Image (cartoon, rainbow, N blue to C red):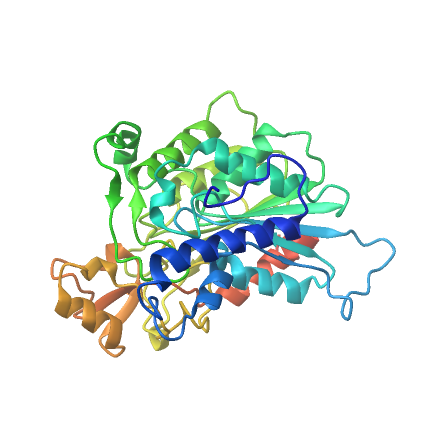
Length: 396
């Protein structure tokens, strides 16, 4: 059977979750855990890795859910990014559960993910679109209001779904984190041709239990095709509120394009864009319109200099990606064993930021740079998400 299950028709969501967990287990056992007991480290046994990579559902909490007669039943569909897994939105889901105990929260697993990077070598845009269609359709009759939450590539898929299904009245808003509406590097336009010559954009160690380090060229080409599709000039503007959170220093996707899209295509009351700006680069949005809030992100006590593409969805205390946690991202130093080891272990002589912080010596003010994987302003962002969902933001 295929690595990830994509139902072609109605399928109970719990069955979808269970079947994908089974498939993830089978691949992880064969490829990783058959060779060593703890391939991702002793703190990540097989069951934990499966839980991090698998789709999930959080049902309404009957002990805390006391609905008023006129309050809507809400649902949230979470769509992760390229090479990622549902874990990247797990803290977001936990916050939603705490704030909206009556909500039903579901996270999809995009085809080609959760297993091994090679499973992205043959994935298609149709596969991803079918998964999103299934996720939305499974909320039919369950909720009055549905919010699509997209991270990176998942943001583009959320926008694509709304564009292709303008009649989807239950969808009341989009929440887009590090929105992948255009890639930062223009060379991505070559990937549809390069995939036949070069199977991989990059190869990594793939030692992260939550996501892939390697990027197949085909997956980048599919992402490029998706971004071209959602910005066709004949498409109508989106007619529902959108919340965006963007790093001005993002080196993976084009932050300025996201801001321009927000200003030009999203003239809907209640929309909001949080733009994280670092003093190190001073990056500000080139577009200006109502609803954009610029947040300075420097936090010296956390050795935090700038937001990266992968920082926005995780709080400081996340056990895997948080401050001085289990998995510092140091792949920029993979060609130097000494610097790689120091980046991973020497907390005092490292800072957190985006890849563009490094100077010619690959340092920032003399210190090695871990790619920022947490958001010191996560709680403030989630408070803004809450008022966006409830449509009662007093500051707007």
